[in-house]
Image (tube, rainbow, N blue to C red; front, side):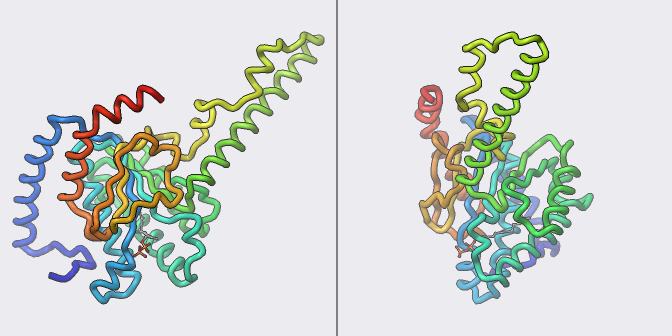
Amino acid sequence: MGPDTENNGDSVASKLFGTLNGFMRKFLFRILSVGPVPNHLAFILDGNRRYAKKWKLQEGTGHKCGFWALMSILKYCNELGVKYVTIYAFSIDNFKRRPNEVQYVMDLMHEKIEGLLKEESIMNQYGVRVYFIGNLKLLPERVRVVAEKAMKATENNKNTVLLICVAYTSTDEIVHAAQESCQHEWDEIQAMKASESNDGGEIISNENQEEHRFINLVDLEKYFYMGVAPDVDILFRTSGETRLSNFLLWQTSTCLLYSPRALFPELGLRHLVWSVLNFQRVYPYLERRRKQV
Ligand SMILES: CC(C)=CCC/C(C)=C/CC/C(C)=C/COP(=O)(O)OP(=O)(O)O
C-alpha cells in the first residue's frame, strides 16, 4: 500500500478502524503504564527525503509525510502520559542545504504552525503547549512571528509539551548559555560595586567575589533554550542512524538511544511501544546513573 501523503482518513471504514485502533491502543497503554513511563522523548527526524525517493514522490512530500507521522506520535505520547516531546526539525547546519529545499521546509513550517493555531488543531484538542527552541533570530521573519504566536496561543495548555528545535544545534545552545551566564555574573558584580560605592566604601567580601567568579552547572542550565524541560529519557533517531548530529548533547547523558530502521514518516505505534519496553528494561540502570551525576 502506498503512502497517505495528505493524511486523509475520512471514509467510514477508516473512521471505524480508527476507533477500534484507538480502543486497542488505550488498552495497550494501560498495560505499559504498569511500569515506569518515560517523561521525555526526543526525535531526530531522519529519512524524509529517502522516504520520498522510496515511493517516487517529490522530495518535499517526504517532509509533509514526516509532519503527519509527528502528529500521530504526539497523539500517542499524549495518550500514554509522556509529558515532553522534543523534535529536531531544522538544525543551523540545515540552512546550508539547497536554497529551494530550505525554502520548502520553511514554507511547510509556516503553513503547519498556522494550522496548529486553529481552534480544532491537535494542540488544542490534546492540550499541547508548544515551545520553539533554538536561535530563532536565524529564522525568516514570517516563520519567527508565527512561531511566537503559537507559543503565546498555547501557553495555558497543560497536558503535553512539544519542543520544536529549529535553527538549533547543541553547541550553539551551550555557547549561548555560557555567554548569558557570564553577562549575568558581570551585571551582578557591577551592581555590587555600585552599591559598595554608594554605601561609602564597604568592601565586598572575598567569599562574595569568589562566588561570582565561576559559572556552575545550575547557572548554565538556567540559560539553556531547553531549560524548560528535564533531561531526555529516550532519544529516537530513525533510519537506523546512530549519530547525534549536535542534538541535545547536554540533555542526553543518561538516556536510552533507540534507532529503528524505519524512515521518519514510517515511525509508528510499534516503534513507540518497543522503545518504552526497552526503557523499562534499563530503567533501574538509568536511575542509578542519574543519582550518581
Ligand atoms: C511545524 C513543524 C513541526 C514542522 C516540521 C516539518 C518537518 C517534518 C521538518 C523536517 C525537516 C528535515 C530537515 C528533516 C530531515 O529529513 P532529511 O531531509 O534529512 O531526510 P534524509 O535523511 O532522507 O535525507
